Length: 268
Image 1 (tube, rainbow, N blue to C red):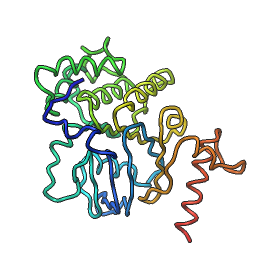
Image 2: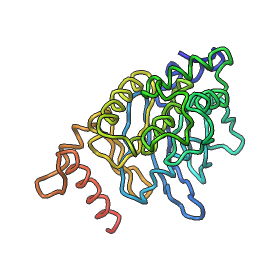
Image 3: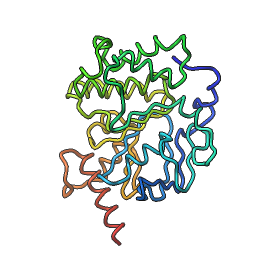
Image 4: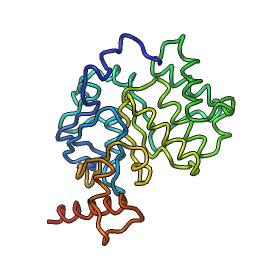
């Protein structure tokens, strides 16, 4: 476990919900993409679903403290993240984030890249090498640790992105479309990793793949038009669908039913 004692106040003993948002509004450029969102999530693996344009990526960027809220309140790991002069550094040290498209230095090796991220997150110097090796092993890239990032396939590069997100053993882990480019076997392995991480971490996974959510998540959050329109377990989601709803599984039919209802209410 890579953790400095000075950050013990950010562990779950002092907060029930890693993410607490109330009336949250966030802009994507000039567009108000998150329009008054309420959300509470704690330890576990939470799947974030919603159609294109629902505000998922903007929400993830706000939770990652990349975007400042335009209005409402946002508390992360028990600390305010919505105030203009909020000290975000302690939160960022205890957070992992994989955006849809992450920046990297193509000439860095996998190990150099993950070590560099550990240094940015202020992992103690004596722990950086071991932390990087552990993160790389957890995503199955040990044999490619010496390969340059520009030499990796899309799926391997995505796994390197996950490694940098978990190198600091985060208390809050945000993954935006983490399975893009992974083959079926890699997706199964990734699901196991998510379940392992969710034992003592708040993990939020944004995805379009309902089957990944059902297989690995303890909780499902569905957003539409910048708001949370449904939250519950995968089993409860499966119960929402009917024979007339599109989808190849009960969960997909449940998701379709939730979105249909949200659109009906938005048009009312």
